[in-house]
Image (cartoon, rainbow, N blue to C red):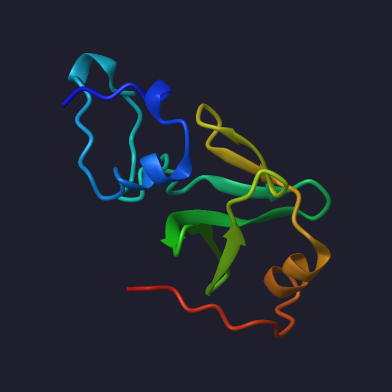
Length: 123
């Protein structure tokens, strides 16, 4: 079956395709390293906040119910950072740096180890 996305004019038509496999010719595929979530492989990228500086190293991106989280290591602690355009400002593959602007409560949780919400990662 050949699908033209231009023919998907409403949500119910799009839902009919949920769970279907999509095959893309090798000549059309993006040649970047991807993890199992389909997001770029960012392992060992340095995560830097615009106000607080270096927060740690990226370990992986975990797709939790459609809400991906960037997991970083800071000291011995693994911390989640929501993958959201308001937080993730820039990813430099060349420099292996992820620039973020995190909310204060998230910085308190990561940097100051202030107890906050308990995050549980699958696996």
